Amino acid sequence: MNLALILQAQGGGSPYSMIIMLVLMVAIFYFFMIRPQNKRRKELEEFRNSLTKGSEVVTASGVYGKVANLNEGEPYISIEIANGVVIKVDRNYVYAKGNQPVQQ
Image (tube, rainbow, N blue to C red; front, side):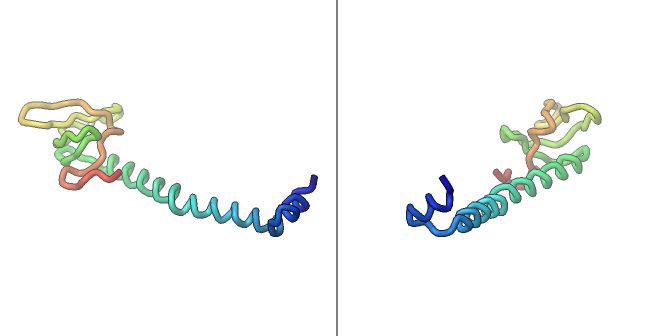
């Protein structure tokens, strides 16, 4: 059966109104969900690339510390969490500067 006939029989408007609604829903989804998430991901990537030795950071688990060594080419960085206590943390789990709250 023809979609236009089914919509008219059910009291719906033209089939174009359904297409317009679908396009509007996709546009709203893009501007309120996808675009902000991509922007936040890009900012986080820039932050991780700008880390230097001595930068204060917060890990995903909430550990505060200073970058002790960046280990270029390695997937982890060394973070000093207390005097003489250094831990290795995956680069992807460093989320914020030490004096800024982590944004979800």
